[in-house]
Structures are given as structure tokens and as C-alpha cells.
Image (cartoon, rainbow, N blue to C red; front, side, top):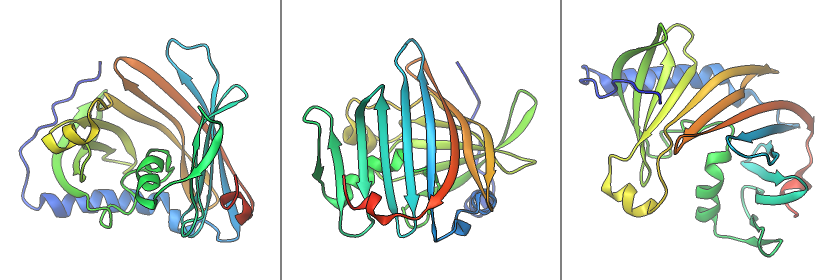
Length: 237
């Protein structure tokens, strides 16, 4: 189990320092520079500890908030979300094996964990409050700790490598009764580790990640590429 002393006393200017750290990281990812005439395709292999099943995740992204997510177990689609960002919001129900229209807010909440840009992307507009919790050390690496409080969700602690500025580790803690009522039996993950970011054009994309929940480890390895833009992929099942 990974343990860190996180509840450090807040320093002066904690909010400004946290924003500086996070904004530096987002500038390094440079997702605003994704080409507008291309489709980003991310193919991910997912390995769950204790399971022999093969899972693969396919994520498609285009501008104007067009996103499509598919999670496959062998030849069976188990999870699916699709939106053209404005008029079409679809979710796949594996028990019935069909796609249905869903409310905008519902899809936005469901699809967010699959967004390659991560929960810190566009943090101001999403109402996330950041504070700087000083530094900690993990395996000789100095990490800057940012506490992120977001509405109706677990509090997250993001740890950035002090030298490179890249995100290394994220922890979740249930520090809010509202989150506990909202998520009922959903538990915070123990940790999520970002092992590697890989350049694609002018951007950096996560290529190796892992996270632990209930002492079970999941490993994700992603390969990404661009294809010609095809808006039909976000407007049909």
C-alpha cells in the first residue's frame, strides 16, 4: 500500500501556487494544439489483477467536445459513450445491447473518467478549488502536492514532479459527507500512478498508467495516433 503524509499545513498563497503548478502541467500537455482537421484515436489495453479476461478501450476525440468511448471484453462491448458535443448524447447498455439517448449532464458525469485530458483539464470552469499542500518525497523524488476539491466528488491530491512538472501520482480521499451521500457505495481509489507521457504531434498523452482500488491493481497501456476527421463517428452508433 502506498502511504504519504499529505495533510501538510497550508502555506501563504496556497491557491495561487496550486494554480501555477496545475497550469504549468496543462501547458506541457498542450491539448489546445491538437489539430482541428484530425481525429485523435487512443487504443488502450486494460489488465485487471486477478482476471484472465482481455479488456481493451478505444477512445476517439475531435474538436467541439466530440468524444466516443468503447470498452470491449473480448468481442463484447461492455461500456459505450458517444456525443457530438451539442445535440447527440448516447450511452450503451450491455444488458440490452443497444444505445439510448441520455441527458447531457448524465453523459458528462459518466464520460469524464474516460477523458484522456484528465479531471484537472478546464478545472476553473468545472468549479474545482485548488490549494497547495507543500511537498512530499516518494522514492527520492520531490513531489509538489495540490489538493483539489470538486463538487460532489471525492477530494483528490495530485502530486507533480517538482523538477519536470509532470503529474506523477493521484490519491482520493472521502473528506466530504456530500460526496459520501452522492456516491453511495462508490469508494475512492487508493491511488493512480502516471508512469509515462508520450509525445504525439505538439502534445503529450498518457501512455502508461496504473491504479489501485480495494487492493486490486489495474494497468493501462495506451497507443495513440491521428486519423482524418470523421464526424459521423460521433453522430451514429
